[in-house]
Image (cartoon, rainbow, N blue to C red):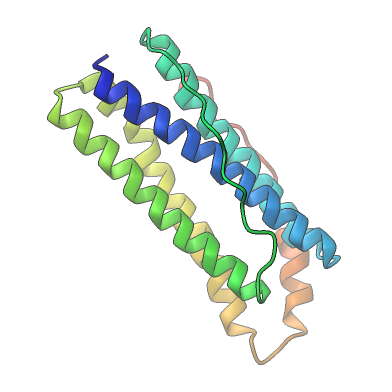
Length: 169
């Protein structure tokens, strides 16, 4: 694997670790507000992001590359509202989609077809990530004038479970 590709994949590995840390911080925010369902949604999201990071870790190792872990920035710990949290989630996922797209562009420019193939799982995953975040965001916006709906949504989000990706994915 070319060094430029290895460096970019390591950068994404660390971005995924930050994403996990960010969602764990959001879970803590919701825990402090006694919103167990929202906290659960974020904990599941944190687990998913950690699994994504490990996919990058394993791929770099599989290709004989050097794994480089860097400092993880401190995520925010407070938001203005529940809506603001999910606006942050949605914007963050769109940013991650952009990072994945840049990795695909780099792999294609280097004719690194193996890495391009590896990244296609993430391309599809980001569609799901954005849809999941925007779905909750839309529901929160709909209930702005009906605060009682937040308790129903909290119950719905409590049902989310972590499903690790299959090893072959």
